Figure 1 (cartoon, one colour):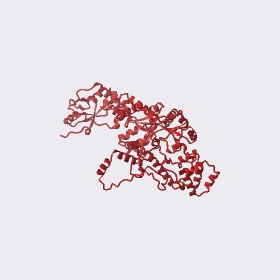
Figure 2 (cartoon, helix red, strand yellow):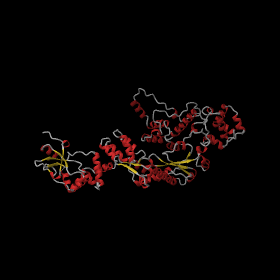
Figure 3 (tube, rainbow, N blue to C red):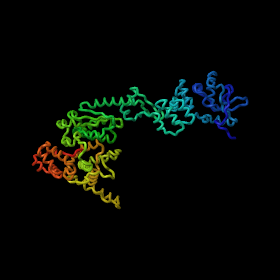
Figure 4 (cartoon, rainbow, N blue to C red):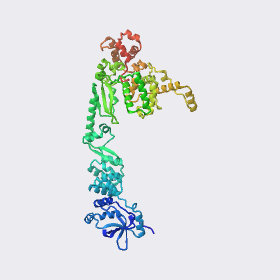
Amino acid sequence: MKQSAIDKAPIQYFPMDRLYISPMNPRESVNDEGITLLAESIKVAGLIQNLAGHLDEDGKVGIVAGGRRLLAMTEIPPEDMAAIGLTEIPVRIAPDEATARAWASIENTAREALHPADEIRAYGRMAESGTTVPAIARVFGQTEKHVYRRLALAALPVPVLDALKAGELTLGAAECFTVAQSEALALEVLDRVRGEDYSVARLKQALQPEAIGKSDRRVVYVGLDAYEGAGGHLTRDLFADQVFLTDADLLDSLYAEKLAMDADMLGQGWKWVETSDDQYIPYEVTSKLDRIYRIEGELTEEQATRYDELAELAEGDVLDEAGQAELDALEAICDGEFTDTQRDHAGLFIFVARDGQLTVQAAFVRPEDRDAAIAAEVLTGHAAMRGQTGSAADAEPKSPISNALREDLNRVAKGARQHAVLRDPDLLIALLAYQLSHDLQWRSPLGLSTEDVPNWPTTAAEGYALDDRLTTNALPDMHGKDLAKSFRAFRKKGEDHIRGELARYLAAHYRGGSDELRALIDKDTKPAIREVWTPTAANFFSRVGGPYLNDLWRDLLDLKEEHPTATTFAKLKKGEKAEMLEALFSDPVIRTARGVTEAQEARIAAWLPEGME
């Protein structure tokens, strides 16, 4: 005989005195505390799940599913039962005894599943009456985590729960409404999304358009504790384990205050300190300044030995906390420190990077402090000898250097760096390992791709000479060759050949990377563009205008505009001017004949066109 499912059986209503627990009911014992809690649940939330039973010959109903609920209702006073509408109890009646026995045997699995909206409201009413979360969990046979999540939904506006019950919102969509910035916004969004298939991400964005995630760099820098301590409000998404900050003005205020305090502390002793709200300092800013570096320290023989020991332990991940502190101290000695004199003439940029970490970019000399820095020997070498035509302060509105010439000069500058870095194969190999093990993207220091890293001017390469290893690196034609055989032959040439070829090709692909990384490499390799390039009539002077040449002639020789040597030069044709300047740069006899002083000689030796670094 086919047996009916409980949820398909008809419901009939009976007074309490006609109900009893049937012998068919498999539950032999009950927990008194559980019955009391269940009675409280029914008093608050009503009878959420109906009973199921079988009519006996006396017209009474033997309950085969729901015995605990029946026992709980016997503990509720009649007046309280009436108050919640339970003067008569709904019972699903089995059509026959066989079906009733089947229901009894599957009592624990045949309960009707509550609609989430009903469950949420039931939990909410119980919590409002003072029932604890553990007690609610025991009554409904759920985990406490499940109850907490349902209670988070119980605080939603009534229309949202109504939409959930009506099938106009999914449970996942309803959960999104717990992070709404206001009830008014929640109801506004609800009207837009009823019955629509909105993604969780879009819905949360609509419900909290001004919220700030805890991964925001300002939040990481300030800290959630500081934000909350200042009265900042947090919205916690219980369903996604996320936290959102809703007071952007307070966060910005705390961020600015902390950055100012840190800048004040870190800037002590420096001539200036500048903070930025951006997550980096643009190249357009730093390119107008002269950068200086720490004075490196030297380890004693004993310290150097200890450093090697600690570094080896660190490489093997077996260095303890004390050892790491000792290694850090030794590395600090190697890195060096800025002197008081450097601090007197230079300053720092301080900002919060994308990961929320306070970052100091140091150190820079401003144009107005340049002369004093040179006098104090804070700026020396090429930086000190750079002519005024190369300074940002005297930059003309329109550069006399054409784009084509600028490209050639840039290529020469790249070549000079490659020429310099070629002297340090170990550094190149370290750079290669670093780039391959890090996702540097466009900031990669080595152009290890199919594109060329040009180091040769498109025209007029006269006066330009690189290391031969950078100019004779034509690749062999490998078409149709046995690569395995070729590789075996290559390896047989030995370690020195392999290392030399690696260094040669790495140098040819070196292009710098980020501003900071390029500055670090320059510091170690000390590239000098004038070591490989000398301006000539063909490669530079004939490619700029006559007025530019007039100014250059006067600047190099310290001539006033009305000086006879200057006026005579200005009357020459452009080609003649170019030839005279080439001779001045390339012929020491000409410089001696013109009475070039030691200071002018140094200026000529260090001179570079503006922006060529």
